[in-house]
Image 1 (tube, rainbow, N blue to C red):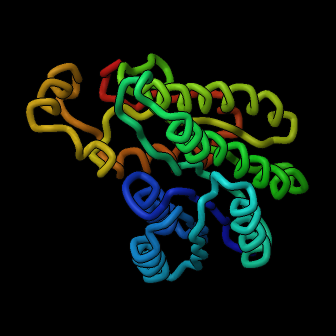
Image 2: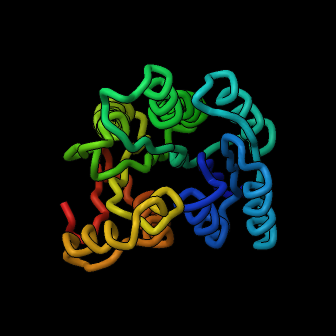
Length: 243
């Protein structure tokens, strides 16, 4: 019997890398991709292969449909099937909306939301014949509440949340579950721009008193997809009680 296969986008660092390593430790075969960090992605691939599981890596902007198609064609040719998709690719943008250019707006929507549509669409095509599969997207608490100075980012994550709830209803009759994790502040490179004073202010607002870790997100991403086929259409907040 062939191993289960999970595809993780945005896996060169941070949460995506942690999720890829977690599934590899659990014995899954892995397909990973990122937009441009080739050396980092190949290092992740080496870590995964050192765990005696197969790993496929792809470099390309999956916010471009043709690149998503190429990634999933490689998955199909290499593994023959797909059990789980984790949409983790994403970028942030900090600044006033009135100062944001249309190009910046389109770029973040391409990276954060278009990629989720493209990869989910292609994953569904592989999952439907098997009448099973799981799609999980990494979202943000700002998709639930909105954040000043992060309007576009909040809009993309709010889009992921609505996408998750709607697609879950569409795919439930086919035994494909769709969920999302809305992360609070996680200790990743994306949040490295915060000054010590800014970080302290945020941590004072979080009942848990700390940032979350990529490994904690990865553990939840694994647990959500492991067994429960009745859990679908949920946006699960992981934020230490912040929001």
